[in-house]
Image (cartoon, rainbow, N blue to C red; front, top):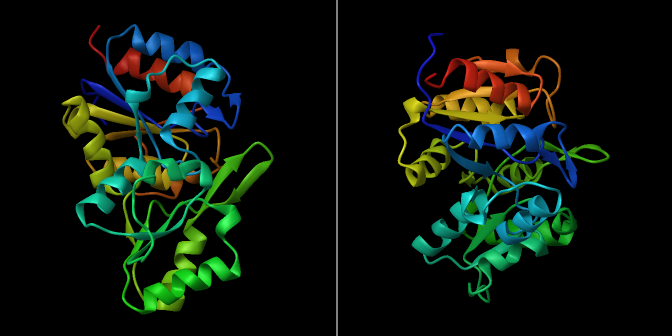
Length: 260
């Protein structure tokens, strides 16, 4: 694949530059090097276990120099959808993420909104959601990640529970986060950069890399976080580049995709 000039970089967070409160080795220094190149940067994440405000506080606490305005989340995309359709969702999302929806009236739910909410994925909550769905309420999945990386290992993502609701209710979920092309393009719109001049860096071969490449970006897969051996061969198109970690991905971009 021929090298092209890159004007913007979308960077995944969890699994790519940090895992919970642990920094991926070399990530802080690599981000400083990237900022010195004056390239446009946006941090894009499917994280739904906490609000953007709390996430930003976590990143700052562990040593990253990131502005809250640089973070684009699937929660933000979901809020835009809820507002645009005047939905009053029954929310299966983590309590730490609910502040994104604080002023939404949910007394008479007419939709089901699902994020990563381990404390809500029990029989009673899922049955309540199921009953709304069979009565015609739409199912909105903030994302459908199969699994994610925690400090104690891989854990089930919300995709398993979204699929269970789809199976039992017979409805199809509308997904608003990665890997939907609209998610990547919305993030780039904020930066004023076309997809053809952008690259996505992430640890999820399907949701980060394949999703971005189908939207027209380049895609770099890092072998940290949820990465498992052989992931790069499981998607089509194949990643533009496979890096051991975020630091190596940044070095590749600076050496090959930026004007000297």
